[in-house]
Length: 286
Ligand SMILES: O=C(O)c1cc(=O)[nH]c(=O)n1[C@@H]1O[C@H](COP(=O)(O)O)[C@@H](O)[C@H]1O
Image (cartoon, rainbow, N blue to C red; front, side, top):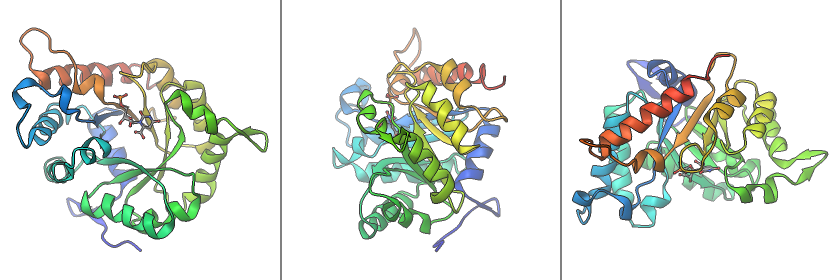
């Protein structure tokens, strides 16, 4: 258990207290998603061998004071064989912004022995503070991640895509499966207090249902911006009594914001990130 506990300014940190500190420090519930699509990178970066690193670093620097977390999506790197660039970006984040949680979005799910390797990849190779996982294979597929008690385990619950309903809405003993997952994680799986849940911004009613079941557990909420989720409804459904409890992710709407006159891509990303952060903050407190 607990191979290496992280320390920051001499104090032990874990995912949950790092996230709480970032909410407060940046007055933000905005998670900036890092989904670098080569075809959409600015023209001056196209063709450069480290284009992804340059692009993501510029986005990170432009938004670090507006974000409560950064969330690289591993497929955007792995599909290109660019894991080395993801490593560099994660190392940069940890070194330059050690107070901002790094969430690796990998949505892993496999038998325990394999899950242990996925956990090493997320927490040791990339140094992530948290990783997204699927609950589909049950507790022994999620438990290996908990050998790192200072890291977050973010379990898919009610995903933002329309097809999420195919399985997540199946009736299980009188209620939809996603509610069963939420209850299970809150009551049984979260024994080290390191779990969070994914609930899409495209389904605010379900965010409210999950919030009722899990107390103050953090929710990762993708789906505002490019997927059209309603910020007001999302925040009102998901906020805790303290007006926090959420990492509301936006990726493409920030990364590929259209520059206004005189702006470059990073300034445009900053403008949209600030607008999104401020729109969220308008509804945080009742
Ligand atoms: O786990 C996730 O982050 C995730 C869960 C989910 O239900 N829906 C969802 O869109 N995501 C991720 O969140 C990001 C959303 O990106 P945008 O739609 O561009 O803001 C992508 O990286 C998705 O892979």
